[in-house]
Image 1 (cartoon, chains in turn yellow, purple):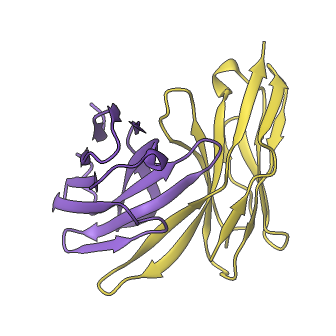
Image 2 (cartoon, each protein chain N blue to C red; image 1 turned 30 degrees about the horizontal axis):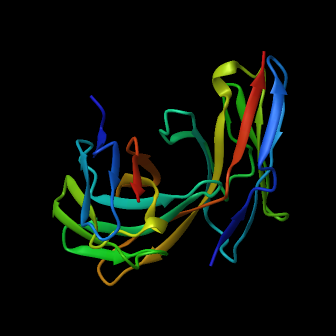
Length: 120
Length: 113
């Protein structure tokens, strides 16, 4: 079974600065997807960025980018020019592919989360 | 309007009571999921349904049951609630044509006294 580990329970960053959140995972699969989700105080789970394992290029979405190290099974999230609205819980997630009797599909395995605080 | 809705948003109940959490979606997705989130932990999968006739247990299904009444509706039941089921519950959906993203509802905070 896949496991996802986020070793930083809490992080803080000064507004306008850059912060990196760490995530490591364990898998025997060669093709998979990784995600970062943001959960603000509203509780809504919001997809921030995704990475396909077969793509060597790191994904980027505006101020958010990842450093995907497939051999090291590491998937960190970098937030540039941090804003007050970035304050939230951030979850790393791994997509597993599996089959049931009738269908095939995906399941997400989540890390324990990192609480990011942004100081004005 | 939200694409994935959950009712109720908050619920307080007593030990032994039967509780149903409901999820509806207007995204037209065939796949639906129920997750549980405990403080300091990520989400854990309770049940998932790939279509109306295909329902499967997830990592932590003990004490829970589900019903897929229609493609758009997926309900989670606690037959006899206990305090350690106090948690935040999320419903999610995905499309079999685009299986690599799940869309989450706003969550239901359940407290069992």
